[in-house]
Image 1 (tube, rainbow, N blue to C red):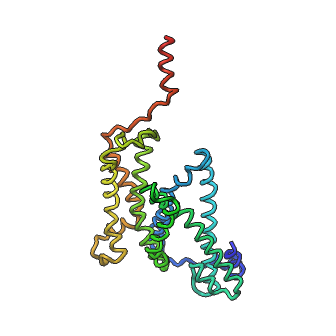
Image 2 (cartoon, one colour):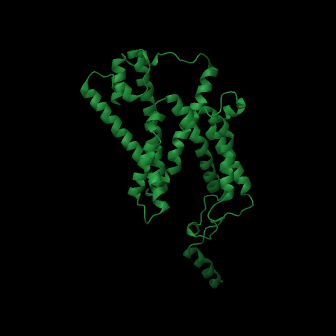
Image 3 (cartoon, rainbow, N blue to C red):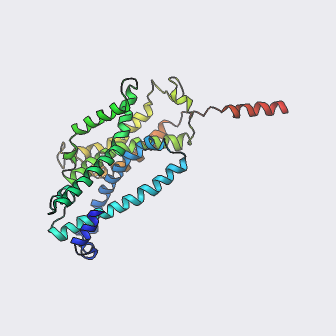
Length: 310
């Protein structure tokens, strides 16, 4: 928020900032940029949507977590997006070129106090975001690999080590590569995963799960050695159409070596993978009967009592 007030003040008000003309020469150029960007943002949020149970499991009720997310996420992210647009536009008015990285922008401040405050804010926000969104879920995953040997704390340290090994500062060094290669790229994987989970829970099982059976090695959810071949096949086929476009985006395949239609499919990677995996999974699972929840003790006693009365 401090950057927002600074941008409005230094940019002589919202008028000059919002009056900046579009950089797109035509509507076609805008839409060609918009849809891959949309896919990237969906991929960005797909990570948290898949691991949100790590947080909602502690909610007091279903309504509590729904209300909390409805109030906390849309409003705050809309505000942050507005701040980002205004501040970036203000940098063009002030410096003659756009600066999207807050760290680079803070380096241009003359006041040492302002630079220190900005760097502290960036550090705190990055730390808070990574702890909330990027550490809790993988820490749980590593801990679940061997609960007796790996604690949640140790899982967090392992996550931190892997996080540094992928050089995240290189990912965000180029905003174009970060959005159109990294975010769109892993949305091609997360879309099919989310599709299989949603199709299984809502369309196949109609929100009915046999909770005790989930923990049985030979229960109805065991499939083949604990692996559902239909889910893995649906995942692979959902990812497959996006692979040529991804390899082209990262430079493994030269431009022109892949049919342009496949490259265009990659721009919608999350949506393509989601729809394809959901359809294939339901098709493969159509002959399998969804396990029914075991009756509660009270439900089992009631019919017996009714028969005695008759």
